[in-house]
Every structure is written in structure tokens, then in C-alpha cells.
Length: 504
Image (cartoon, rainbow, N blue to C red; front, side, top):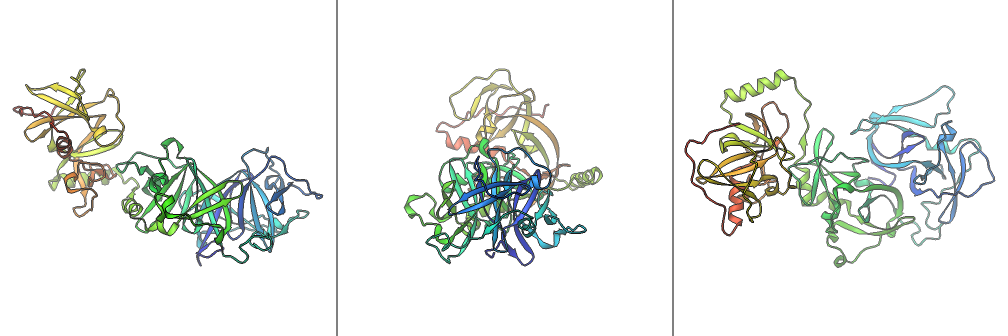
């Protein structure tokens, strides 16, 4: 990608902004940086519609314009507004904006040109965000800077010698600045596919310390990775995930979970200072630190290293396609065909997320017991007696690394024959019993051979019945054996009852 923000001859990178009650965009070639707007601006001996005053930015004074007032839609000033530094023809101007909404690469062939008789438009074209479908207007920087009576100043934002800086003539780079918990991070805009201002985080079979769930993006379920966990800097709490940064790793996407998107800034390459390798847990994923005016020190992520990271590549390879719902007749035909071909039946149930398991593993389904005899064995809820046997009851959610959930009205026990004895798994609710309609016999699953199918991350994916989702095919016997091997005394091994039956 070139320094002016173009991704290819057919693709341009835009900064997305909320301004004057409208979603707008600016090509990065015209967007120098974004800075906080102070409560009070410096007065100027000039008057023009929307001219608010000036901002003292480093060593020059930048006029600031409220585009809403120019358009006849003024709004009250807010403390969290920002100033976008816009450049055209060697001049710059500050535009008041409500917020930065990230960046987006847009193919040139999707832009729709705009015009009006007699001219005077302040935007040149429109587009719909390629992922969200949100409409954006592309501001015409030249037209805005040419508004009558609006003062502009010489563009020295990319001339280090004019600012007296040490990096005269140094190459420049545009960074997207982010907040992740207590840390400020930055990454080259060239390595960002797009950003998600408010990702809808959903639970997933991939949930772990590193993966915080999935979001729906580009017709897929895409894993959301905690950057702090990836960098070895701690953990971002689920409640703090208020934005997302999308990386395109080729085989699929990964979303980095963030607290918020802060700014787009233009810096010289030599402003990014190297850090000692021993001072950070994952120095291979960082290219240095940079001091961003108004924000302070930011850790600069190495975008190329992120795209090549094996862990992120693993998550990118398991994007799940979200299919548009086919007609019910097509679904029913698929199920009928699967049953006619002897496909095995599966039981679908929930532990906060839906899971499938072969029906032939389940000997009985019982209501959740009113009382349990508690034990001190981790993972066990207690013991019950059933058909002249003592049956251990396991919390399946806990064994799979999920949050323990209180038993609701729909909770029940799945009794599974494990090496001649029954083990009960407590689950939230039953969904359905239906034939398996799809599986990939060659699909690669992660994890040790002994754990195959016994964890959410190592379970292969299947489709069941009329459900178009890919669900984990959990081996409940392997789950129980995994716990038995970990416990010094093992689990109780009651006698196998005679004539087991499926009850509801």
C-alpha cells in the first residue's frame, strides 16, 4: 500500500467519520490526523459560516470549521468531539467531527458519483460500506477548503523541517490508534481491513482466554481475539469490548477486540522508536512505541507480523459461513435424504451455546434432580441414585471451560454409558433429535489426540437436521474419560443398569 492510502489501483482506504449528523468518509490521502477538540478555540480575525476559531496544533494555528453550520444543521458542542485535519492543494483546515468510526477499503468501482446543477456540492460520491451496508458520503476536500471566506493554512503536517522536527524528509505512515483496556495501541492503516464500531460479541465453541467469542462479519462467524492476551499484557474484560479491528489473513478474518477506536494520526517513520526485546512479552508482534500528541505513548503493532502469526492464522482458518436460510422445503428434503441414507441421529442441546452429540451415546434423559449428594471432586455437581446405581453428575459447561450456570426450569441430565457405568451430564435445555446432514471427514481439528472431540476446540463440526449452523460434535464419553484420567481416584464406576432406555 502506498503512503497516500491507496490499497491498489482499484481500491482506496477511507477514514470513516460521523460529522454534522451524517456518516462521511475521507480518503487517507486527504486526512492528515485527528486530534481532540479543546473546549475553547482561539479567535481569528475572520468571519465565515461555520468558522469556530482556531486550534493551536504543535507550531501552527489551524482554523476549525463546523460543517454542520455550513449545511444549516448546527448542533451543540460536546466535550468528546474531535478535529479532523483535512488537506488539499497544499493547504489544510480543521473540520469538527463527532467521532472517528475507523477505516475501510473501498473498491473504486462501487463508488457512485454525485453532482448538482451549478456545482456547490461538498461531497464527490457515495458508497455503501462493503461489510455493513451503511451509506457514506465522500467529502470533497478541495471543495470544502475553497468555501468563500474560510481561512486555510499552508500544509506543513508532512514537512518535518517546517516544524523544526528531526525527521526532515523521513517517510510517513498513517496509524490507527486504539485503546485496549489500560493500553494504547497503534497499527498501520495499511494492515487494517476495516473497523467495527460496536461489535455484537456472541459465545462460541472457540471461546478461550485468547478468543472472546465471535461476531457476524461478511456473512461469516469471525473469531474475536483479545490483543492483550495475544501480547501477554493481561486480559480485556468482556464488558470492555466496545469496538473491533478486522484483519484479513487470507484464509479468513480475525477481529481484534478493543475498548475504543481513538484517532487516525500521521507520523514519520523515525517517530516510531524501537523497544528493547526483553521489555515486552511478545516483542515479535511490536514494531516500537510512538508518542501521539494528546494521547501519550502508544505501542505500535507490527501489522505484517500479526498477519503471519500462527495463532491468528489458526483462528482465521475456522471462519464459519453464515448461510441465508433456504426454503423449508429444501431443508426438509435434505433431512429426508440424510435419514434415507442411514445418517446417524444426533441430539442437540444447550449449555449457553448449542452442541450436538451422537444420540447413541445417550442412554437416558432425566429431569434435573431436586437434590444431589455433593462431593469435593472438581467438576462434579454431586451423586444421584438411579436404577440401583450411584451416578456421578457432571457440570458439562464447567468441564468445557465455560461459566457454571444455575439449573433452570428446562435443565436436564444426559446419562451416558462410560466403560460399563453411567455418568450424568447436566445441560441447560434440549433442542431436538435429528439426523446428521453434513460433516467433512477430512476436516482438521485442533488439540491432542487424547482430547479429540472432548473439548469444544477439538470437536469436529457438523450440521444436524434443518439447522444450517455448524455445531461442535462433542464426544461425551471422551469428556468423562478425560476427567477420570485427571482425578487421582477417578470417578465412581457404578454397575451398568439393565435395560437402559431413552426417557423424556
